[in-house]
Length: 115
Length: 113
Image 1 (cartoon, helix red, strand yellow):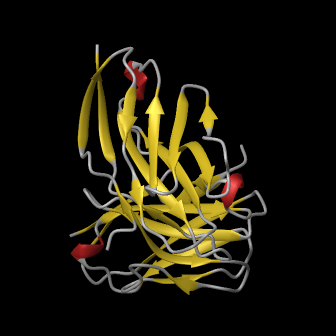
Image 2: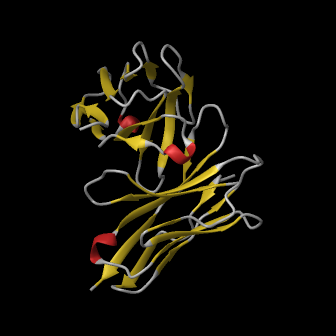
């Protein structure tokens, strides 16, 4: 079974509109962490936002926010006021197995912002 | 600049050849990881290390070996390259994971012909 599921292979969004990228996860651990990364066409992995399983507040970082619904095992990334530079692949990832800190990635969503 | 450096950035190998990818970090991170990225499959963990002198298998370890003789370096070896190992390889490191996050190298694009 997939540990991280991203069901949107690709999305097209009009510039300045908000973007919602879905991510669901599967774990039996009580302590885990959820990450979102951006990979532009240049290939580097850029850290966007982190949510710990015990964090009561949803994480926010500038235009990025994470809608964390623990009971549904969902970690949706919201990008407000999208920009052309937001066009990239976006990966959701989960850290579990406390002690070795491994990250498991989803298959990604390719976001294209339309001018 | 502090970070994770991968060498080489590009490489073409013939089937059966061997090579070593080097990952170096200058942040005194304990944990280091090697991932491969294939189209439509995200990043998959090959091997990882939780400290100098330790290594462990990840999700897709077959055909690869690793060593962590020094804390700052994590080497990924391919003893007999196969076309199925054509991929982009990423190294990453972290202090304790979690809120401290992970730092990724810029990747190595390997083609096996």
